[in-house]
Amino acid sequence: MSLQKLSSQACFEQIKTFPLWLYDEAAGTMTREFIFRDFVQAFDFMTQIARLAEHHHHHPNWLNVYHKVTVTWTTHDVLGLSDNDFLMAKICDDTFNQFKVSK
Image (cartoon, rainbow, N blue to C red; front, side, top):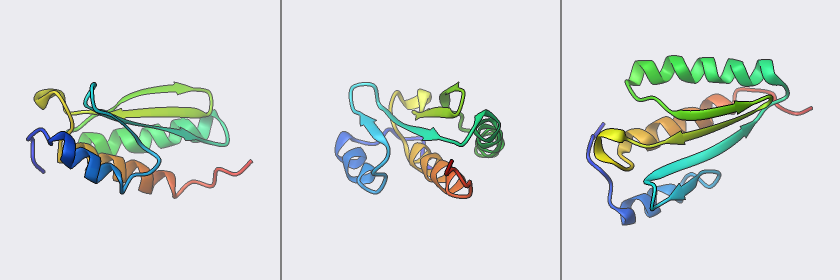
């Protein structure tokens, strides 16, 4: 994966394939809120993402409040988004899709 900062145009194009993620051009971030059945399920998701993030040497900014996990990706080394952020967003989406979240 590249550690080059993506242009705003490239980010706008790539974010189209991530409709549940919000792109903040000014901050150079992409964010999504994941909602789970309960706190334990949310924490399990965070644990899985933590392991995958460590494997990819790319770590999220995130917030957990009870059954909600908000994940923000950015590449601090380039002060914006890189291909790594989109890879990790896909990993988050794929991991979330493995959970049964209906109440």
